[in-house]
Each structure stands twice: as C-alpha cells, then as structure tokens.
Length: 264
Image (tube, rainbow, N blue to C red; front, top):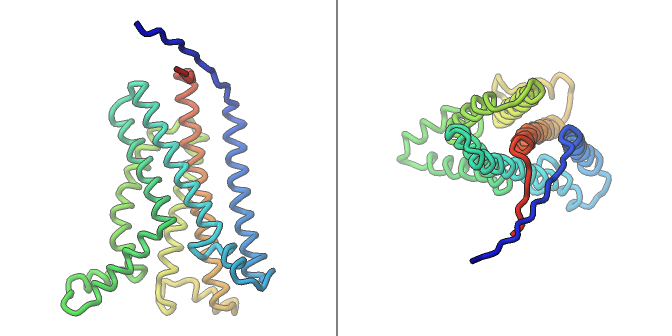
C-alpha cells in the first residue's frame, strides 16, 4: 500500500491588476525600443556600428527581434496552457483543438521571426522560379508585385488566421476582451499591409512611400527605415494584445476551476 501525502497550494492572483500591468509594461518596452532606435541608431548617438545595429528595429538581428520572438513564443505557451486546462476541464473538442492550433501557430511565428524562415523560403522560391525551364513557377512568381514569400505563406497563414479569428471571437469573454482582440487584429492587418508596400518596386503606383518621400522631400532611407520601424512596432503591440487576451482567458478558466497545485 502506497501512502501519498498530497498538499495543495491555492494561488490568489489579482487578475485585473496583473492584466493592466502586463499591458502597460509590454507596450512601454516596445515604445522604449522605438526610442532606442531613433536615438542610438538613426540619431547616431554613437559611432560604434555594432551598438547601432543592435538597436536598429529594421534589422532582424537586434534587441527588438529578440523581444518580439520571445513575446510571441510566450503567447503561444499561454495558448497551449489554455489547451491543457480546457482539456482537463472537459471542454468541447472544438474548443480544445482551437487552442491547440492557436498555440502551435504562435509558437511557429516565434520561430519564424527569429530564424527568418519566410524570408529565406521566399528567396529560395525566387531563385528556383527564375531558373530556365521553370516557366510555371516563373509565372506564379510574377503574380505578386511584392515579396515572393507572400505567394507561399499568405494563403496558408491567412487561412489559419481567419480560423483563429473566428475561434477567438467565440471564446473571448466580455466586451473588453473583444475590444482588445479587434485592436490586435487591426494592428496586425496594418503591419501586413505595410510589409506588402515595403516589398513593392519604388516606381509601383501602389508604393505610397515614394509619394511621401517626394512630397516631403525626405531621404529614401528615412522613409523606408521608419516605415519598417512602424511595421515592427504595430506587430509587437498586436502580439502584446493577443497575449493579454490569452492571459485573461487562462486566468478566467483557472478561477472557475479553482487553482490548486498538487505536490506529491
């Protein structure tokens, strides 16, 4: 006979305060990253190239990219935690699968952001499609006037995104959470549009950056750089809001279930 002593620890979490502080701190960090780029990188606070590159939000190897991918990964972990809790609570299969898909999607996006998967796959596709004899791929390549990776990833990620939007809208609790969800979707959508414009040829009629540069007589680098900074900032704030939505939902589930940590 096995005698097992079980101890339970009840956690008391100030939900509203925690969510509010989470939102304020994360957006504060994102604003700091923008300021760091403006002052250290663009403003040439230092003549040391390594430090300027590290603070450059338009690059994929700086502090901002590390923060963005880490935040996205944690959002994915939170969604996976909801999947586990929902399954333990005996929720409908459609709900648990939805959180599983959401968790996997955000974890993939974190990996993609850190490893630049979509950019590199897009470059490989362009190289292959441009070779002699690949007429069909070459024709497909010229469908999109922007980055080649969008031809491959937008249909796939867009379909998953539409499913998640429908699912999260049903799962969201209360008007405040849905407002955050709407804001997150609008910011992410704007970031995607900005990325599309960034990939256009400078002479393309849809390239509003050219009009802005010419109208205000700005340097090409100034416009392209801050367009990229704006895109990255909007994307980070969007992920923050998604993470807050996930966290609110997880805390709500834990409150309903009664949080107990079993120690054996």
